[in-house]
Amino acid sequence: MLDTLEKLRPSDFPAIRRARLQTLQVNLGYRCNQQCLHCHVAAGPNRIEVMAADTADLVVECLRRLPFDTLDLTGGAPELNPEFRRLVEQARDLGLKVIDRCNLTVLNEPGQEELAGFLAEQGVDIVASLPCYLEENVNRQRGKGVFDGSIRALQRLNALGYGDPQTNLNLDLVYNPQGASLPPPQSGLESDYRRILDREHGISFNRLLALANLPIQRFGSTLLSHGKFDDYLDLLKGAHREENLQQVMCRSLISVDWQGYLYDCDFNQMLGLAVQTSKGQRAHLRDLPALALDNKAILVADHCYGCTAGQGSGCGGALQDGN
Image (cartoon, rainbow, N blue to C red; front, side, top):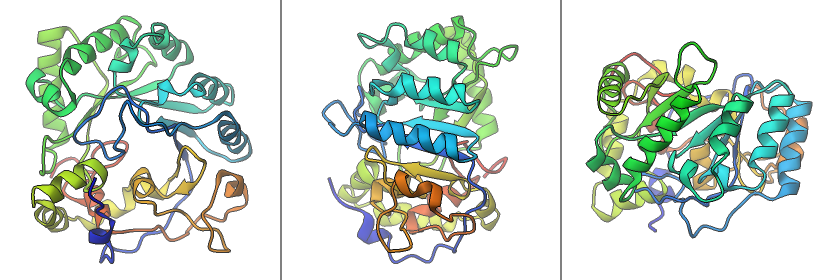
């Protein structure tokens, strides 16, 4: 895989500083039952990086000691980590909101038959990848049969109450562009998703989150190999909007990798741009309670333009109403 970091630094991205920490986003490992073309983690079935139990213990300790509002679990497929359910239960016992960033088809995997019911019982918010409402597009981006598996999983979640505005079981879908382009306006695309998924499959959901593809890992490598990296970076820079800087996710989030090291966001994690201690060492979960992160400068590079281009992009979808 081609490395993109050297093409992203040095950078003229504006300096930004952290606000109050609200979300602990934990990457439980890069193992996944899918291998998607746009994946910025380069996750897949052959990845062996998985968070161990002692590191998961440190996650819980930080949740107990620090005033986080949300535990955001991601991967790979975070549900494949043996510590996933324990982390969910302990975070919910602490009164935290828990988000599962789910690829949907993991709900159909052998041994995961009770997973959907567990998520509903725990009141976990599901943020589910469905990069298009058309079968051909999804299978091209994510693999043969993924669309059908995703639809079956969504129907199962709906049967449990997910996506029903009368329940507290939130189900958000995630759209990613097929290639080197910005997402269309989120609100209009959400209307299309609602109409087609309901008409064709009887599926309902709460929100659509439109996310830009960042030029790192598998997607960045693909851009480089096709000679499109510089053009895509120019597209992101040309669409930069200063007003998005106040809402980017890294201002209220800290990202944790499978080994427990800390980053300003999941994208920085994939680039190896770690948060530093006062001694210039990589910061770890063990250091987090003592770190003074409020108003601390965030490590930036040119990939950050992916979060501020057009309508903006982050873990919660678009930052503005339109492009």
